Amino acid sequence: MMNKRLERKDFDYSHVFDAAIESYREDTARYLRQKKEYCLLQNNEFISQANDQNYNLFQESIENSEFETFKQKMVNLYNDKFSNKKYKVREYYDEIKLISPNNICPYCLKREVRNLDHFLPKTKYPSLSISDANLIPSCSDCNHDKLNSTKLYINYYFEEIDDVPYMKCYVDFCNEDINFRFELVKPPTWEDEKFNRLKNQFKDTDLLKFYAEQAKIEYSRKEKSFCRSVKDCNSYNERLESELCDLISDEEEVLGINSLEATLWRGLNENGKELFKYLSKLLTLKAR
Image 1 (cartoon, rainbow, N blue to C red):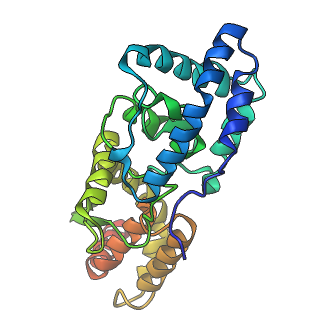
Image 2: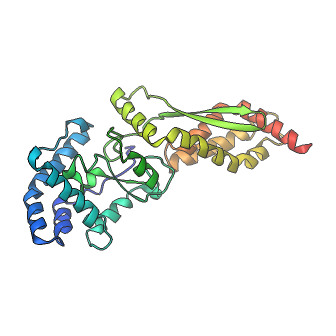
């Protein structure tokens, strides 16, 4: 089973390119038509390098004297045409947005997809400005946080990311409160380079802090149910363990093993005895 979060649309880049430039005035359209073959070759080269995660090997080969003009026209092609609801070519943009399962951002696995993110920035790699291989559905927050970054992330079209857990949740039981801390843990089968790209992504988007905050909310939604599983029981194994195992199974199936929710419930399950004591004490305090 493949564990890629996204299945690429694999549009005919030639057709997409033609559709994007058809409404331009003749001088701009002529310039872009002259660059079409170069962009097609660049797109194929990027896909070839991405299949082996050799993203650093991909480079633009436009002469320096022309690069600024080429960049501006290709950036405008994305901003003014490809992503503009007034033009028919926008249908490709919308189709890519729909790729992500359950409309959930593949970067954070939490928020809704709102726009498209350029995996390699369009200002540095303008030949890929409207390439579906370089456009990843994302939420507004992840896209915004990534805007000014020059670091490489995980590309969810080309890499298996959810074959093994890469994150751990630690639980802190404090009297009448409970707090969570998330930490990235390098899977033994991963190369350092891949794990570093994952760390880049989490650092730039501040996901570990976001997960810790969201975990409090997710836990609070389940606390009453957990208390019911603890009531009139003598140990964690009687009912609470079964409830947590069901939650883990459900979340891993729907969102994947590295979702916030699946990681949270695994962390609580690993601390099952402490959770049972915490909830038992909470019930005792509420009964007073």
